Length: 137
Image 1: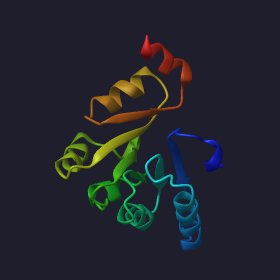
Image 2: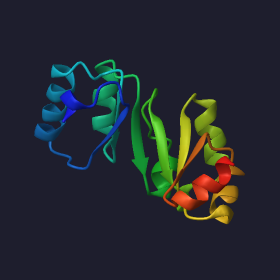
Image 3: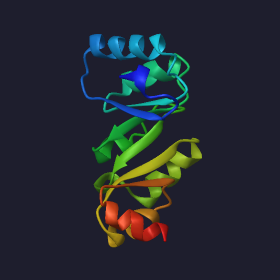
Image 4: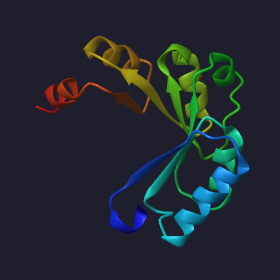
């Protein structure tokens, strides 16, 4: 797949926690010299740490558990992509103080978007194309 994507940025969500899957993805990305255009997303902190340690400029830790956010167990350099139910203004502020970029998911409408934006996040994931188009005009 990577050989046909040109310079298009790619988000690769690694859902498996097996070291083999992590290694396979790493080998494919290296083989196609894709380090600078691929963002790796994972629910696994160790996977995110692995890709950051290999010099990948962007690795996102996906978090759905509020306790994980409150423990601030997020690797330095990672981008935190946090489920809206786990976000508070205080933990967004604490993550920003550590230099961690915080994204929130998922806004389905304007109310969700405004609520998540008001927490001070750096970005909001939205799965409603018509809403996104309405915000661009």
